[in-house]
Length: 452
Length: 78
Image 1: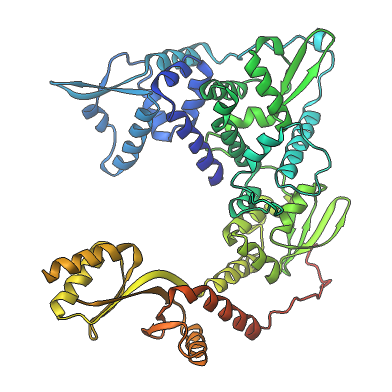
Image 2: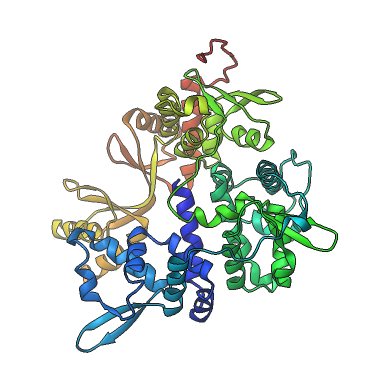
């Protein structure tokens, strides 16, 4: 799913933006190295693997021989990424030119990982202490419930019954950008808020995690520590218990927040307390790779625009309400219809037809998911048509020029505007033209110069 | 020195444009600065939003946009 990739990439941009020293520190953790490797573009992954057991630097020239001419742009992207993340370091030598070598810490960590196999970040606790652990199904249900509860609270829904323990200041940080925050006015979802709700869980989680990290300094938590802890957490086994006393104070506090999001479940025994990572946590670094897991869908859309959503979730109902008319609700079924009005409502809120369609396709019920297309074509076409109907008029801020003294001046002005990519319309007979407002200032300068 | 007029370039299909021009005539040229061709015109910057909402109003009327409440029972679920 493209959204996950974009957001995950943004997360890695955050990692790349860390100061060099912190980045080097991060690479001392083998799990970070693996997570970073997973996040790289395919070609960059290949280069890292290819150079993993080469101790010396490889010259740019010989690397360029590895790629075909039309792969050059991808090659550049890969190299840039590797340099940005300080996985590659550049050295210059008079005789052989520029060459790259792998970050030694990163290299030795990955070598170990490959030759000795992966190990877990910490040992799970023996069953003798923890007694009975929740089953994987229970754990998943718990994670989903926590996450849903958090989301309902996030969008300020009246449907939220249970409150999470997330502080209201933290909640406001998460809501920043998703809800309008004007005084004396009930908060409303913004355009990105609507789009946020239509994303799949992993993408939403990444968004929240990113906000959580970028605000960590205000809570006196080092962002590099936090990133490393989160990535490390994703390498724990789902459903196993891990002792809390293996963690630092800061990490323990972080875990409390993560428990509210449904990433971990906290439990307490007689003497010890422990945390159990859920699927949400262990999926964090998996979703950095391209593979996307398909969840069970729940929506059936018919050719007559009627929609049946087999779900007990209040959140699903809230999401469907964004773009459809909910007619009635049974304990496990939401029935509604996609109407012109409901869609116009959605478009006005900044949701695009493509987002709605991809949401419907991604959440298609198992009974219809195998059909091609899973959402009836006449419905998707109509959704697109209704949207384009709203955008029949296209507007561009512009300046209109008239009364040119001579054809030469007119033509020079046209060429000038074209060069800036700002020529919207020209009429050479009457010598009139329209340019975008952004180039108006340049245009004015140009005409002044001409006159002198 | 050529003359420059600030505005918003409006591009749409001919029927829509005809409606905009009609609106403009009825309101004593309040909106349109220059009629360029049957798909383009230049509109006064401060009147754009007003024009947009008036056009939408007329379109809604023309399209007969009334909430449909017919819940049809013919389902194509097997």
